[in-house]
Length: 457
Image (cartoon, rainbow, N blue to C red; front, side):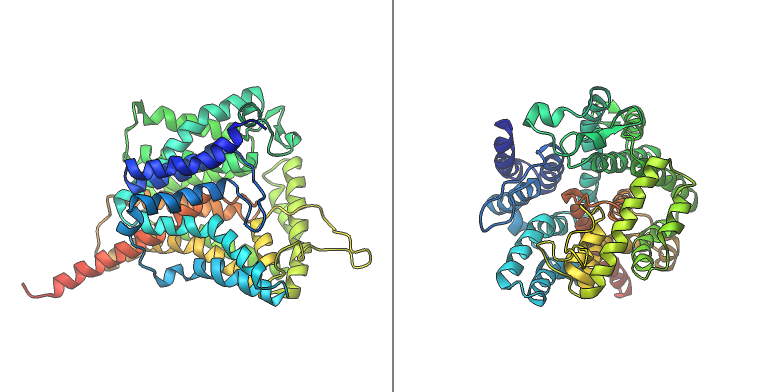
């Protein structure tokens, strides 16, 4: 491990404080969160009595201290809404109830609460505080675009030279190297947790860039024409050699043509509904492993089917175990892990899907609260811009409608990915909070406009 690891992990807090002092809070949050997510090492310091200090913790502390020391936190007060209840439950209620119901004690519950706040709550409420307007939402959209442009040469380097950047800069490889050899070449990992996380990021940024280009919302990215950059991002996403990247990219690009033709967000809302429907069907055993594999086998090769088989097997085993403590889960310390009743040995070595982890540790309360928190902003914004609601309210298109729908689509892709992988990232949580804030602001503005029309002139 090189000296760049502690320098980056602790120095990023001070970089973010500097950003808050030198630029707008929206740019500081976007640059600090996206930059830290992309560039900090995937590493964690285990200090006694406090949650692990990883890249999410470093960014979260930068947001807290930067906002406080610059005064921006006071100048951008957070006005809580009923839409914030799911995240409040996930961060404050679920950890305590899970711990106490399992006899793990209040201290363990508080420790888990602090961990959830640093990994999820801080980013969600930063989105709520600083991204309520269309202009601020565009700042975040451009953060995705620029983050993708910055990452593209790093991705292409590792596609050609193998995943070596983490070794070169930080002196360690963050995962199993064999998993990043794919189709006779390499799958990039750069500084993230896994190649799957890179592929989701590249698909999201390619989608954002493509939408801005095709909708004519932007012609250039800094000094470069946006068209070739969009095509380069699409190519880099394909070269990530991950099935999830190809699926998400296809959804993102085809979604634009659907929206341009229909001006409807109905299919995007249906895409969001896929997440809870899938979870319900799998928990109730309505859809079997065999049915899912038969369907997936029509589209993917044998290696991808084998990977999916492992994930579905995990779902079945953890689902049975989760049903034993369905409401509040098993808590931490691996208590929810499926084991052989005769030997007490674990039946599987690892678990992939975030939704499985959430229901195992936090139960139905935790699962509904976190997926609700991440999806409610997208659901409400897409409803705001649906063709029927626009006609009924007689409102015109917002100048930032495309930016809002881009972020809704990216958040939806992250939720879909959480059905198969556990690739939690602060940037998607930030976007989820921003969408809630944007919706609340748009509804308030619309209501004020309607009321002004009712007042006699």
